Amino acid sequence: MLDMNPIKIEGETFIAVTLKLPKTNFMAVMNDTGYIMCGALDVALLNDKLKERKIVAGRAVGVRTIDQLLEAPLESVTLEAEELGIKAGMKGKDALLKMKYD
Image (cartoon, rainbow, N blue to C red):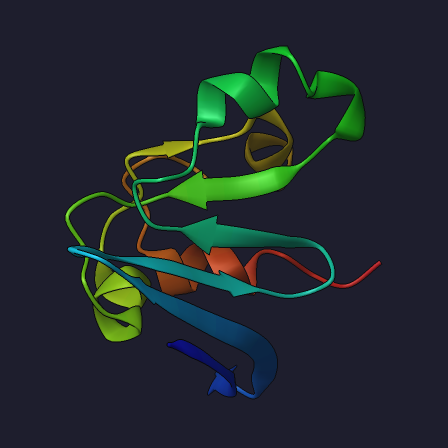
């Protein structure tokens, strides 16, 4: 099953997506600038092989719900996310608020 819903964080709108897969969930919260995601995100791939795309993203591990993803500290972030002041250890929702629309 796929759930996709708008969510508000301090007045900013983001899209939350949960894909229920056998034995796991895939989750992401995004806007036009970037996204945070569950442990399925390969930050090293984005930083190395897809560097030219300048993807703004962060990864949280051990989360099972969108609420947990928003509250969890990010385990890793892309180089482009760091350029926006997003750091590993930052809560997901705080990272999202640094992803301003261009």
